[in-house]
Length: 544
Image (cartoon, rainbow, N blue to C red; front, side, top):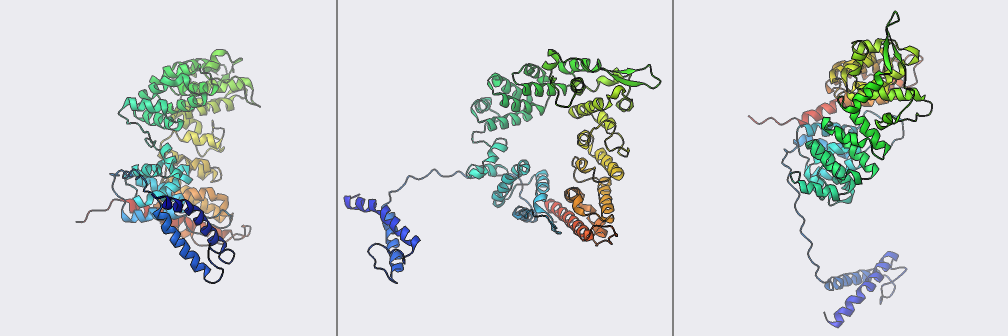
Protein backbone atom coordinates (compact mmCIF):
# COMPACT_ATOMS: atom_id res chain seq x y z
CA UNK A 1 0.00 0.00 0.00
CA UNK A 2 1.44 3.44 -0.98
CA UNK A 3 1.86 6.27 1.52
CA UNK A 4 -1.00 8.23 -0.16
CA UNK A 5 -3.38 5.26 0.01
CA UNK A 6 -2.48 4.68 3.65
CA UNK A 7 -3.15 8.35 4.45
CA UNK A 8 -6.55 8.20 2.76
CA UNK A 9 -7.44 4.97 4.57
CA UNK A 10 -6.44 6.46 7.91
CA UNK A 11 -8.72 9.48 7.34
CA UNK A 12 -11.72 7.39 6.32
CA UNK A 13 -13.13 6.65 9.83
CA UNK A 14 -13.20 10.32 10.79
CA UNK A 15 -14.84 11.34 7.50
CA UNK A 16 -17.40 8.52 7.77
CA UNK A 17 -18.34 9.51 11.34
CA UNK A 18 -19.00 13.09 10.17
CA UNK A 19 -21.30 11.82 7.44
CA UNK A 20 -23.18 9.60 9.89
CA UNK A 21 -23.61 12.50 12.35
CA UNK A 22 -24.92 14.73 9.57
CA UNK A 23 -27.44 12.07 8.51
CA UNK A 24 -28.67 11.66 12.10
CA UNK A 25 -29.04 15.39 12.74
CA UNK A 26 -30.43 16.20 9.27
CA UNK A 27 -29.04 18.54 6.61
CA UNK A 28 -31.22 21.40 7.95
CA UNK A 29 -29.05 21.44 11.08
CA UNK A 30 -25.72 20.35 9.64
CA UNK A 31 -24.41 20.12 6.08
CA UNK A 32 -21.77 17.72 4.75
CA UNK A 33 -18.20 19.05 4.66
CA UNK A 34 -17.63 21.25 1.62
CA UNK A 35 -21.35 21.50 0.75
CA UNK A 36 -23.34 24.73 0.93
CA UNK A 37 -26.67 24.70 2.83
CA UNK A 38 -29.79 24.50 0.69
CA UNK A 39 -32.09 22.06 -1.13
CA UNK A 40 -29.15 20.25 -2.72
CA UNK A 41 -27.64 19.27 0.62
CA UNK A 42 -29.52 15.93 1.02
CA UNK A 43 -28.43 14.75 -2.44
CA UNK A 44 -24.87 15.87 -1.75
CA UNK A 45 -24.91 13.92 1.52
CA UNK A 46 -26.00 10.70 -0.27
CA UNK A 47 -23.33 11.20 -2.97
CA UNK A 48 -20.66 11.72 -0.31
CA UNK A 49 -21.82 8.60 1.57
CA UNK A 50 -21.71 6.52 -1.64
CA UNK A 51 -18.19 7.71 -2.43
CA UNK A 52 -17.04 7.11 1.16
CA UNK A 53 -18.48 3.58 1.06
CA UNK A 54 -16.44 2.72 -2.04
CA UNK A 55 -13.33 4.21 -0.48
CA UNK A 56 -13.83 2.25 2.74
CA UNK A 57 -14.25 -1.03 0.88
CA UNK A 58 -11.22 -0.35 -1.31
CA UNK A 59 -9.09 0.26 1.76
CA UNK A 60 -9.99 -3.02 3.49
CA UNK A 61 -7.43 -5.76 3.57
CA UNK A 62 -8.59 -9.32 2.85
CA UNK A 63 -9.47 -11.15 6.07
CA UNK A 64 -8.61 -14.72 6.92
CA UNK A 65 -11.47 -17.03 6.01
CA UNK A 66 -13.35 -18.43 9.00
CA UNK A 67 -13.49 -22.17 9.54
CA UNK A 68 -16.37 -23.59 7.59
CA UNK A 69 -19.34 -24.55 9.77
CA UNK A 70 -19.89 -28.26 9.99
CA UNK A 71 -23.31 -29.41 8.78
CA UNK A 72 -25.95 -30.34 11.32
CA UNK A 73 -26.11 -34.07 12.09
CA UNK A 74 -28.74 -36.18 10.42
CA UNK A 75 -31.82 -37.20 12.35
CA UNK A 76 -32.68 -40.77 11.29
CA UNK A 77 -36.19 -40.75 12.78
CA UNK A 78 -39.20 -40.61 10.43
CA UNK A 79 -40.60 -37.21 9.47
CA UNK A 80 -43.85 -35.93 10.89
CA UNK A 81 -46.98 -36.37 8.77
CA UNK A 82 -47.74 -33.03 7.04
CA UNK A 83 -50.91 -32.37 9.08
CA UNK A 84 -49.03 -32.95 12.33
CA UNK A 85 -46.24 -30.59 11.22
CA UNK A 86 -48.81 -27.87 10.56
CA UNK A 87 -50.37 -28.51 13.96
CA UNK A 88 -47.00 -28.18 15.66
CA UNK A 89 -46.42 -24.83 13.95
CA UNK A 90 -49.77 -23.53 15.24
CA UNK A 91 -49.08 -24.74 18.78
CA UNK A 92 -45.68 -23.06 18.82
CA UNK A 93 -47.07 -19.83 17.35
CA UNK A 94 -49.66 -19.48 20.12
CA UNK A 95 -48.75 -17.09 22.92
CA UNK A 96 -50.46 -16.87 26.29
CA UNK A 97 -52.80 -13.92 26.55
CA UNK A 98 -52.43 -11.18 29.06
CA UNK A 99 -53.50 -12.28 32.53
CA UNK A 100 -56.12 -9.72 33.31
CA UNK A 101 -58.95 -11.89 34.64
CA UNK A 102 -62.40 -11.93 33.10
CA UNK A 103 -63.68 -14.43 30.60
CA UNK A 104 -61.34 -16.78 28.85
CA UNK A 105 -63.77 -17.32 26.00
CA UNK A 106 -64.20 -20.61 24.17
CA UNK A 107 -60.80 -20.82 22.45
CA UNK A 108 -58.48 -23.63 23.64
CA UNK A 109 -55.18 -22.75 25.28
CA UNK A 110 -52.80 -24.16 22.68
CA UNK A 111 -49.65 -23.77 24.73
CA UNK A 112 -51.18 -26.01 27.40
CA UNK A 113 -51.68 -28.69 24.72
CA UNK A 114 -48.07 -28.56 23.55
CA UNK A 115 -46.72 -30.88 26.31
CA UNK A 116 -49.30 -33.53 25.41
CA UNK A 117 -48.54 -33.17 21.69
CA UNK A 118 -44.81 -33.61 22.37
CA UNK A 119 -45.43 -36.69 24.49
CA UNK A 120 -47.51 -38.29 21.73
CA UNK A 121 -44.96 -37.39 19.03
CA UNK A 122 -42.11 -38.82 21.10
CA UNK A 123 -44.06 -42.02 21.74
CA UNK A 124 -44.30 -42.51 17.97
CA UNK A 125 -40.62 -41.74 17.40
CA UNK A 126 -40.98 -38.79 15.00
CA UNK A 127 -38.24 -36.29 14.19
CA UNK A 128 -38.85 -32.56 14.55
CA UNK A 129 -39.14 -30.57 11.30
CA UNK A 130 -35.93 -28.52 10.91
CA UNK A 131 -37.86 -25.28 10.37
CA UNK A 132 -39.66 -25.74 13.72
CA UNK A 133 -36.49 -26.11 15.82
CA UNK A 134 -35.96 -22.37 16.63
CA UNK A 135 -39.53 -21.93 17.87
CA UNK A 136 -39.34 -25.22 19.76
CA UNK A 137 -36.14 -24.15 21.52
CA UNK A 138 -37.65 -20.76 22.34
CA UNK A 139 -40.69 -22.46 23.89
CA UNK A 140 -38.47 -24.78 25.95
CA UNK A 141 -36.36 -21.84 27.05
CA UNK A 142 -39.41 -20.12 28.52
CA UNK A 143 -40.91 -23.23 30.16
CA UNK A 144 -38.67 -25.62 32.05
CA UNK A 145 -41.49 -28.19 32.25
CA UNK A 146 -41.31 -28.53 28.45
CA UNK A 147 -37.58 -29.12 28.23
CA UNK A 148 -37.26 -32.91 28.60
CA UNK A 149 -39.96 -33.70 26.01
CA UNK A 150 -39.02 -30.80 23.72
CA UNK A 151 -35.32 -31.70 23.62
CA UNK A 152 -36.05 -35.37 23.07
CA UNK A 153 -38.29 -34.46 20.13
CA UNK A 154 -35.87 -31.85 18.78
CA UNK A 155 -33.06 -34.40 18.60
CA UNK A 156 -29.39 -33.87 17.71
CA UNK A 157 -30.01 -30.87 15.46
CA UNK A 158 -31.26 -28.85 18.44
CA UNK A 159 -27.92 -29.34 20.17
CA UNK A 160 -26.15 -28.27 16.99
CA UNK A 161 -28.22 -25.05 16.97
CA UNK A 162 -27.76 -24.50 20.70
CA UNK A 163 -23.99 -24.26 20.23
CA UNK A 164 -24.57 -21.33 17.84
CA UNK A 165 -27.01 -19.29 19.94
CA UNK A 166 -26.33 -18.34 23.58
CA UNK A 167 -30.08 -18.10 24.24
CA UNK A 168 -30.37 -21.86 23.71
CA UNK A 169 -27.37 -22.97 25.76
CA UNK A 170 -29.77 -24.47 28.33
CA UNK A 171 -30.21 -27.36 25.88
CA UNK A 172 -26.53 -28.28 26.23
CA UNK A 173 -26.94 -28.54 30.01
CA UNK A 174 -30.31 -30.27 30.00
CA UNK A 175 -29.79 -32.91 27.32
CA UNK A 176 -27.60 -35.96 28.05
CA UNK A 177 -24.55 -35.71 25.85
CA UNK A 178 -25.32 -32.10 25.02
CA UNK A 179 -22.16 -30.51 26.38
CA UNK A 180 -19.47 -29.36 24.02
CA UNK A 181 -17.17 -31.96 25.53
CA UNK A 182 -19.71 -34.79 25.69
CA UNK A 183 -17.87 -38.06 26.26
CA UNK A 184 -18.05 -41.17 24.21
CA UNK A 185 -20.21 -43.52 26.35
CA UNK A 186 -17.96 -46.42 25.33
CA UNK A 187 -14.74 -44.70 26.41
CA UNK A 188 -14.08 -44.84 30.19
CA UNK A 189 -11.17 -42.42 29.90
CA UNK A 190 -13.32 -39.86 28.10
CA UNK A 191 -16.01 -40.21 30.78
CA UNK A 192 -13.46 -39.82 33.58
CA UNK A 193 -11.96 -36.73 31.92
CA UNK A 194 -15.32 -34.96 31.83
CA UNK A 195 -16.09 -36.04 35.39
CA UNK A 196 -12.83 -34.56 36.63
CA UNK A 197 -12.70 -31.43 34.45
CA UNK A 198 -16.30 -30.60 33.53
CA UNK A 199 -18.58 -27.91 34.91
CA UNK A 200 -20.93 -28.87 37.72
CA UNK A 201 -24.00 -29.02 35.43
CA UNK A 202 -22.10 -31.22 32.97
CA UNK A 203 -21.04 -33.55 35.77
CA UNK A 204 -24.58 -33.89 37.11
CA UNK A 205 -25.86 -34.64 33.61
CA UNK A 206 -23.07 -37.16 33.07
CA UNK A 207 -23.70 -38.93 36.38
CA UNK A 208 -27.46 -39.10 35.76
CA UNK A 209 -27.04 -40.47 32.24
CA UNK A 210 -24.41 -42.99 33.32
CA UNK A 211 -26.54 -44.11 36.27
CA UNK A 212 -29.39 -45.00 33.90
CA UNK A 213 -27.05 -47.19 31.81
CA UNK A 214 -24.67 -48.64 34.38
CA UNK A 215 -25.54 -47.98 38.03
CA UNK A 216 -22.33 -49.54 39.36
CA UNK A 217 -20.09 -47.50 37.02
CA UNK A 218 -21.82 -44.27 38.06
CA UNK A 219 -21.39 -45.07 41.74
CA UNK A 220 -17.70 -45.96 41.21
CA UNK A 221 -17.14 -42.63 39.42
CA UNK A 222 -18.71 -40.76 42.33
CA UNK A 223 -16.61 -42.64 44.88
CA UNK A 224 -13.39 -41.56 43.13
CA UNK A 225 -13.85 -37.88 43.97
CA UNK A 226 -16.34 -38.03 46.86
CA UNK A 227 -13.89 -36.88 49.54
CA UNK A 228 -12.94 -33.72 47.61
CA UNK A 229 -16.41 -32.59 46.53
CA UNK A 230 -18.17 -29.61 48.11
CA UNK A 231 -21.03 -30.43 50.51
CA UNK A 232 -23.73 -28.98 48.26
CA UNK A 233 -22.33 -30.90 45.30
CA UNK A 234 -22.18 -34.13 47.29
CA UNK A 235 -25.87 -33.71 48.10
CA UNK A 236 -26.82 -33.32 44.44
CA UNK A 237 -24.64 -36.22 43.34
CA UNK A 238 -26.04 -38.45 46.09
CA UNK A 239 -29.57 -37.65 45.00
CA UNK A 240 -28.79 -39.06 41.55
CA UNK A 241 -28.46 -42.53 43.14
CA UNK A 242 -32.25 -42.70 43.55
CA UNK A 243 -32.42 -43.97 39.98
CA UNK A 244 -31.57 -47.65 40.02
CA UNK A 245 -31.12 -47.73 43.80
CA UNK A 246 -30.22 -51.26 44.91
CA UNK A 247 -28.42 -53.38 47.51
CA UNK A 248 -25.06 -52.78 45.82
CA UNK A 249 -25.29 -49.11 46.86
CA UNK A 250 -25.50 -49.93 50.56
CA UNK A 251 -21.79 -49.86 51.42
CA UNK A 252 -21.30 -46.44 49.85
CA UNK A 253 -24.42 -45.03 51.52
CA UNK A 254 -23.35 -46.45 54.90
CA UNK A 255 -20.09 -44.52 54.61
CA UNK A 256 -22.06 -41.39 53.70
CA UNK A 257 -23.81 -41.63 57.08
CA UNK A 258 -20.64 -40.19 58.64
CA UNK A 259 -20.46 -37.26 56.16
CA UNK A 260 -19.62 -33.79 57.47
CA UNK A 261 -22.87 -32.40 56.03
CA UNK A 262 -26.10 -33.03 57.93
CA UNK A 263 -28.11 -32.86 54.69
CA UNK A 264 -25.89 -35.47 53.05
CA UNK A 265 -26.25 -37.74 56.08
CA UNK A 266 -30.04 -37.35 56.03
CA UNK A 267 -30.26 -38.16 52.32
CA UNK A 268 -28.04 -41.23 52.72
CA UNK A 269 -30.23 -42.45 55.59
CA UNK A 270 -33.37 -41.89 53.53
CA UNK A 271 -31.97 -43.90 50.62
CA UNK A 272 -30.88 -46.72 52.93
CA UNK A 273 -34.31 -46.88 54.55
CA UNK A 274 -35.78 -47.47 51.08
CA UNK A 275 -33.72 -50.69 50.96
CA UNK A 276 -35.65 -53.00 53.32
CA UNK A 277 -32.75 -55.44 53.70
CA UNK A 278 -30.13 -52.80 54.49
CA UNK A 279 -28.42 -52.76 57.87
CA UNK A 280 -29.85 -49.31 58.60
CA UNK A 281 -33.40 -50.50 57.86
CA UNK A 282 -32.87 -53.42 60.24
CA UNK A 283 -31.59 -51.10 62.97
CA UNK A 284 -34.56 -48.80 62.49
CA UNK A 285 -36.95 -51.75 62.59
CA UNK A 286 -35.55 -52.84 65.99
CA UNK A 287 -35.88 -49.32 67.40
CA UNK A 288 -39.40 -48.76 66.00
CA UNK A 289 -40.66 -52.19 67.10
CA UNK A 290 -39.55 -51.43 70.67
CA UNK A 291 -41.92 -48.46 70.66
CA UNK A 292 -45.09 -50.07 69.24
CA UNK A 293 -46.94 -53.17 70.45
CA UNK A 294 -50.42 -54.69 70.81
CA UNK A 295 -52.06 -54.58 74.23
CA UNK A 296 -53.94 -57.90 74.48
CA UNK A 297 -55.18 -57.28 78.02
CA UNK A 298 -58.11 -55.22 76.77
CA UNK A 299 -61.40 -56.65 75.53
CA UNK A 300 -60.63 -55.08 72.15
CA UNK A 301 -56.96 -55.33 71.11
CA UNK A 302 -55.31 -51.93 70.75
CA UNK A 303 -51.92 -50.56 69.81
CA UNK A 304 -49.88 -49.04 72.60
CA UNK A 305 -47.03 -46.65 71.95
CA UNK A 306 -44.01 -45.85 74.12
CA UNK A 307 -42.05 -43.15 72.30
CA UNK A 308 -38.26 -42.91 72.72
CA UNK A 309 -37.04 -41.00 75.78
CA UNK A 310 -33.80 -39.88 74.13
CA UNK A 311 -32.10 -39.56 70.76
CA UNK A 312 -28.68 -41.14 71.18
CA UNK A 313 -25.63 -40.80 68.95
CA UNK A 314 -26.38 -44.02 67.09
CA UNK A 315 -29.85 -42.77 66.18
CA UNK A 316 -28.42 -39.48 64.94
CA UNK A 317 -25.85 -41.33 62.83
CA UNK A 318 -28.73 -43.23 61.20
CA UNK A 319 -30.42 -40.00 60.18
CA UNK A 320 -32.69 -39.19 63.12
CA UNK A 321 -32.77 -35.43 63.61
CA UNK A 322 -32.53 -34.76 67.34
CA UNK A 323 -33.99 -31.23 67.48
CA UNK A 324 -37.74 -31.13 66.98
CA UNK A 325 -39.36 -28.32 64.95
CA UNK A 326 -41.22 -25.61 66.81
CA UNK A 327 -44.52 -26.88 68.14
CA UNK A 328 -43.55 -30.56 68.06
CA UNK A 329 -42.75 -32.67 71.08
CA UNK A 330 -39.35 -34.31 71.00
CA UNK A 331 -40.57 -37.82 71.74
CA UNK A 332 -43.27 -37.77 69.05
CA UNK A 333 -40.74 -36.27 66.60
CA UNK A 334 -38.26 -39.11 67.26
CA UNK A 335 -40.99 -41.76 67.07
CA UNK A 336 -42.20 -40.52 63.69
CA UNK A 337 -38.71 -40.70 62.22
CA UNK A 338 -38.12 -44.23 63.49
CA UNK A 339 -41.42 -45.58 62.17
CA UNK A 340 -41.00 -43.81 58.85
CA UNK A 341 -37.58 -45.40 58.29
CA UNK A 342 -38.51 -48.92 59.43
CA UNK A 343 -39.45 -51.46 56.72
CA UNK A 344 -43.22 -51.89 56.59
CA UNK A 345 -42.69 -55.64 56.65
CA UNK A 346 -41.78 -55.21 60.32
CA UNK A 347 -45.34 -54.63 61.46
CA UNK A 348 -47.40 -57.74 60.58
CA UNK A 349 -45.02 -59.95 62.57
CA UNK A 350 -44.76 -57.44 65.41
CA UNK A 351 -48.51 -56.84 65.68
CA UNK A 352 -49.91 -60.36 65.82
CA UNK A 353 -49.72 -61.45 62.20
CA UNK A 354 -52.31 -58.91 61.11
CA UNK A 355 -52.58 -57.52 57.60
CA UNK A 356 -51.90 -53.83 56.96
CA UNK A 357 -55.65 -53.17 56.70
CA UNK A 358 -56.25 -54.87 60.06
CA UNK A 359 -53.35 -52.99 61.66
CA UNK A 360 -54.65 -49.62 60.47
CA UNK A 361 -58.10 -50.46 61.84
CA UNK A 362 -56.78 -51.10 65.38
CA UNK A 363 -57.37 -48.32 67.92
CA UNK A 364 -54.23 -46.59 69.18
CA UNK A 365 -54.02 -45.59 72.82
CA UNK A 366 -53.09 -42.30 74.48
CA UNK A 367 -53.66 -40.10 71.43
CA UNK A 368 -50.81 -41.56 69.37
CA UNK A 369 -52.93 -42.60 66.37
CA UNK A 370 -52.33 -39.47 64.28
CA UNK A 371 -48.56 -39.57 64.75
CA UNK A 372 -48.28 -43.31 64.13
CA UNK A 373 -50.51 -43.37 61.04
CA UNK A 374 -48.81 -40.31 59.56
CA UNK A 375 -45.43 -42.04 59.93
CA UNK A 376 -46.79 -45.18 58.25
CA UNK A 377 -48.04 -42.97 55.40
CA UNK A 378 -44.58 -41.53 54.87
CA UNK A 379 -43.07 -45.01 55.00
CA UNK A 380 -45.56 -46.32 52.41
CA UNK A 381 -44.71 -43.43 50.08
CA UNK A 382 -40.96 -43.88 50.54
CA UNK A 383 -41.10 -47.65 50.05
CA UNK A 384 -43.81 -47.48 47.35
CA UNK A 385 -45.81 -50.18 49.10
CA UNK A 386 -49.19 -50.63 47.39
CA UNK A 387 -50.74 -52.81 50.12
CA UNK A 388 -50.00 -50.36 52.89
CA UNK A 389 -50.99 -47.39 50.70
CA UNK A 390 -54.32 -49.07 50.04
CA UNK A 391 -54.90 -49.68 53.75
CA UNK A 392 -53.98 -46.13 54.75
CA UNK A 393 -56.12 -44.56 52.03
CA UNK A 394 -59.20 -46.44 53.21
CA UNK A 395 -62.43 -46.44 51.25
CA UNK A 396 -62.98 -43.36 49.09
CA UNK A 397 -66.58 -43.16 50.29
CA UNK A 398 -65.54 -42.89 53.96
CA UNK A 399 -67.21 -39.90 55.68
CA UNK A 400 -63.92 -38.15 56.47
CA UNK A 401 -61.92 -36.89 53.51
CA UNK A 402 -58.68 -37.43 55.43
CA UNK A 403 -58.80 -41.24 55.51
CA UNK A 404 -57.78 -43.54 58.35
CA UNK A 405 -54.10 -42.74 58.12
CA UNK A 406 -53.52 -39.81 55.77
CA UNK A 407 -53.25 -36.48 57.50
CA UNK A 408 -53.86 -34.37 54.40
CA UNK A 409 -55.01 -34.57 50.80
CA UNK A 410 -51.41 -34.06 49.71
CA UNK A 411 -50.45 -37.18 51.67
CA UNK A 412 -53.29 -39.08 50.04
CA UNK A 413 -52.10 -38.00 46.61
CA UNK A 414 -48.65 -39.42 47.36
CA UNK A 415 -50.18 -42.70 48.60
CA UNK A 416 -52.21 -43.00 45.39
CA UNK A 417 -49.00 -42.89 43.34
CA UNK A 418 -48.13 -46.39 44.62
CA UNK A 419 -51.31 -47.88 43.08
CA UNK A 420 -51.83 -48.94 39.48
CA UNK A 421 -53.40 -46.41 37.08
CA UNK A 422 -56.78 -48.16 36.92
CA UNK A 423 -57.13 -48.58 40.67
CA UNK A 424 -55.98 -45.00 41.21
CA UNK A 425 -58.62 -43.61 38.83
CA UNK A 426 -61.40 -45.72 40.35
CA UNK A 427 -60.48 -44.59 43.86
CA UNK A 428 -60.47 -40.89 42.93
CA UNK A 429 -63.80 -41.30 41.08
CA UNK A 430 -65.34 -42.74 44.24
CA UNK A 431 -63.84 -39.91 46.29
CA UNK A 432 -65.38 -37.27 43.99
CA UNK A 433 -68.79 -38.90 44.16
CA UNK A 434 -68.67 -38.75 47.97
CA UNK A 435 -66.79 -35.51 48.64
CA UNK A 436 -67.11 -33.42 45.47
CA UNK A 437 -64.51 -31.63 43.38
CA UNK A 438 -63.32 -29.00 45.84
CA UNK A 439 -61.43 -31.66 47.83
CA UNK A 440 -60.19 -33.63 44.81
CA UNK A 441 -57.93 -31.28 42.84
CA UNK A 442 -54.63 -32.61 44.23
CA UNK A 443 -55.83 -36.19 43.76
CA UNK A 444 -56.69 -35.63 40.09
CA UNK A 445 -53.13 -34.49 39.41
CA UNK A 446 -51.69 -37.97 40.08
CA UNK A 447 -54.11 -39.84 37.78
CA UNK A 448 -52.92 -41.20 34.44
CA UNK A 449 -53.84 -39.29 31.27
CA UNK A 450 -56.24 -39.69 29.59
CA UNK A 451 -58.50 -40.26 32.57
CA UNK A 452 -60.20 -43.65 32.70
CA UNK A 453 -63.95 -43.53 31.85
CA UNK A 454 -65.20 -43.83 35.47
CA UNK A 455 -63.04 -40.91 36.56
CA UNK A 456 -63.98 -38.79 33.54
CA UNK A 457 -67.67 -39.37 34.18
CA UNK A 458 -67.29 -38.50 37.87
CA UNK A 459 -65.56 -35.20 37.03
CA UNK A 460 -68.12 -34.17 34.40
CA UNK A 461 -71.04 -35.10 36.65
CA UNK A 462 -69.57 -33.04 39.49
CA UNK A 463 -69.06 -30.05 37.18
CA UNK A 464 -72.64 -30.39 35.99
CA UNK A 465 -73.89 -30.40 39.59
CA UNK A 466 -71.87 -27.25 40.29
CA UNK A 467 -73.36 -25.59 37.19
CA UNK A 468 -76.90 -26.47 38.25
CA UNK A 469 -76.19 -25.00 41.69
CA UNK A 470 -75.48 -21.64 40.03
CA UNK A 471 -71.93 -21.09 41.31
CA UNK A 472 -69.32 -19.33 39.19
CA UNK A 473 -67.16 -21.70 37.10
CA UNK A 474 -63.92 -20.00 38.07
CA UNK A 475 -64.34 -21.63 41.48
CA UNK A 476 -63.54 -24.81 39.53
CA UNK A 477 -61.09 -23.30 37.04
CA UNK A 478 -58.26 -25.59 38.17
CA UNK A 479 -60.38 -28.71 37.69
CA UNK A 480 -61.72 -27.41 34.38
CA UNK A 481 -58.16 -26.81 33.16
CA UNK A 482 -57.20 -30.36 34.15
CA UNK A 483 -60.29 -31.72 32.39
CA UNK A 484 -59.31 -29.94 29.16
CA UNK A 485 -55.93 -31.67 29.24
CA UNK A 486 -56.85 -35.01 30.82
CA UNK A 487 -60.36 -36.10 29.77
CA UNK A 488 -60.45 -38.72 27.05
CA UNK A 489 -61.18 -36.90 23.75
CA UNK A 490 -63.93 -39.45 23.05
CA UNK A 491 -65.96 -37.80 25.85
CA UNK A 492 -66.56 -34.69 23.71
CA UNK A 493 -69.80 -35.93 22.13
CA UNK A 494 -71.24 -36.76 25.55
CA UNK A 495 -70.73 -33.14 26.65
CA UNK A 496 -72.74 -31.51 23.87
CA UNK A 497 -75.82 -31.41 26.09
CA UNK A 498 -73.97 -29.11 28.51
CA UNK A 499 -73.25 -26.35 25.99
CA UNK A 500 -76.58 -24.53 26.31
CA UNK A 501 -76.95 -21.70 28.81
CA UNK A 502 -78.75 -23.28 31.78
CA UNK A 503 -81.74 -21.82 33.58
CA UNK A 504 -80.34 -19.99 36.58
CA UNK A 505 -81.88 -20.63 40.00
CA UNK A 506 -83.02 -17.63 41.99
CA UNK A 507 -80.04 -17.71 44.33
CA UNK A 508 -77.50 -18.21 41.51
CA UNK A 509 -74.64 -15.79 40.92
CA UNK A 510 -75.62 -13.27 38.20
CA UNK A 511 -74.48 -14.38 34.75
CA UNK A 512 -73.07 -17.68 35.99
CA UNK A 513 -75.01 -19.64 33.34
CA UNK A 514 -73.26 -17.82 30.51
CA UNK A 515 -69.86 -18.41 32.05
CA UNK A 516 -70.60 -22.12 32.43
CA UNK A 517 -71.73 -22.35 28.81
CA UNK A 518 -68.45 -20.80 27.67
CA UNK A 519 -66.43 -23.07 29.94
CA UNK A 520 -68.08 -26.23 28.61
CA UNK A 521 -67.77 -24.96 25.02
CA UNK A 522 -64.04 -24.49 25.57
CA UNK A 523 -63.81 -27.95 27.12
CA UNK A 524 -65.57 -29.61 24.17
CA UNK A 525 -63.53 -27.63 21.62
CA UNK A 526 -60.29 -28.58 23.38
CA UNK A 527 -61.22 -32.27 23.55
CA UNK A 528 -62.01 -32.35 19.83
CA UNK A 529 -58.77 -30.55 19.08
CA UNK A 530 -56.84 -33.12 21.14
CA UNK A 531 -58.59 -35.91 19.27
CA UNK A 532 -57.58 -34.34 15.95
CA UNK A 533 -53.99 -33.92 17.17
CA UNK A 534 -53.69 -37.61 18.00
CA UNK A 535 -55.25 -38.63 14.69
CA UNK A 536 -52.78 -36.44 12.78
CA UNK A 537 -49.86 -38.15 14.52
CA UNK A 538 -51.02 -41.61 13.46
CA UNK A 539 -48.76 -43.11 10.76
CA UNK A 540 -50.10 -42.67 7.26
CA UNK A 541 -51.51 -45.80 5.68
CA UNK A 542 -49.57 -46.90 2.58
CA UNK A 543 -51.43 -46.53 -0.69
CA UNK A 544 -52.95 -49.83 -1.95
